[in-house]
Image (cartoon, rainbow, N blue to C red; front, side, top):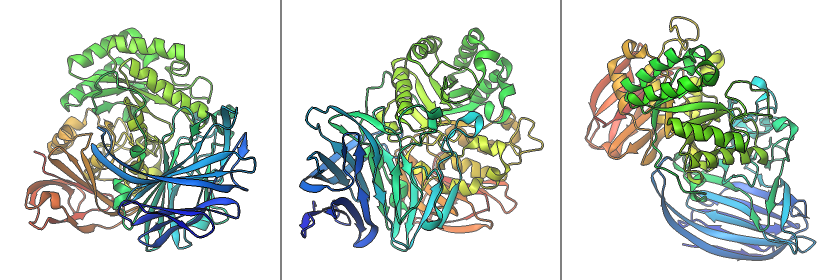
Length: 637
């Protein structure tokens, strides 16, 4: 059903979702454009500003309504590396056009599906003007006063390791009053909000490519959050904070996911619904699991002999890949690396190699350096990589959201595709629809990931807390290359003392399901082949990394999380408990009605267990989850 209305003298237009529950009202009032969002007749977002400023025209004030048009979208697409493999997207559209004092026009284009709103600005040609610079946006999000926020702050530019920040690696504030979210540098996308007892909203953006910059949320000011462009200090002060675009042109999509419960938040596919592939894959890319020595054995493991051990570990686990991290070019060398790749291939293991993205933007010094930041060097390197049989790259240390950096991401991806290479980004920004836009993109970190478990006691203490957030926030909008499933008792090579892991083995297995990424580099070590229960290893050998369906089961961000993922006919239901006491859950699993399933869990002493249990005919199963523990239920054999 398409609902579109003109209301009153303010040129208001209302566009509703196909089911009629979600609607957006757009209007010009006091010579400014604004919008409101209602779900099931409840106000989820109050009068919020729209508009932007370009070098050639201001569209934030003194604008007048021109016209509006509507349409419908009904499409089905397939995507093999997001939370669902087949997606049906139905939405109603509204294109709302205004003019400024100079007579120049701009359109606000909305798409409204049953739980998602996506909108962007569409700029036509203005006479002889064929290009412009978008300097800033007025775009805002005004929540009812009863709302609370779950947000991760934007890092101060040119701080942190080797001045590589921001890299989307901050912690979270959870369920706090909006008035307290005033971080100087704002907050990264996505941001989660609880609107009193009415429901939930997830804000993000998608469709960012080389022709625009990434953006983030401002701190809360004057009752509203606004879209902020990158701070000038990013990228060592080089490059514009805005976007240079040709006309006609469009901005990226701002997305608003709305639900009475958290189910639409966890299951949303809006980052991919409104974008399209930018090029064809040069080969059939293969996803899977891998080992990597650096996470626990660190820099000293970057030698031929240690990498052989990790290749043998990958082979023993039936994993597809090994990731060989920083310093390989100096400590193994190109000639011996060719021999090492041949050895890996003889074990049916393929290779990812690490690269430093940097050449001038920060002080990151790890090598290979100056190989990815210029076209000539990059293509020469990739030609060698293709020749020796490397299958993928992990490129690190970007730090910033300026258009200059977005071009670098796209250039690396496009060139890599020409040579049949997959790409993981690390020390990086949020992926914004990239799984669909770039066929060889296979994940980004953009999270306080496994390496910080090694380096920070605070992060180890909050590991379960953060894990309970990710399905609702970070991993809800994009692949998350966490590098987890750590089964050492101590997070170091000796596994005897030092950085003690505070979560259970079953928690670690659960994150292998909970955290979605098509290529997963797990933190196993060779000693795990003999010092962890065999049933844990068997589980990891069978675990898929791509999914046909994702279903929210239960949870609350910051407390616990339970979700189900399906690969073919195999279901994996994973949960983690971030609270300080055991939690007994009665969960509803209609997909496993009456079936005998395997339950990986922890006993009262937090030791791993494996049992066969039967799901009730009504689909119910009761599970007790230990503090900082987890569980997995699966019908996989």
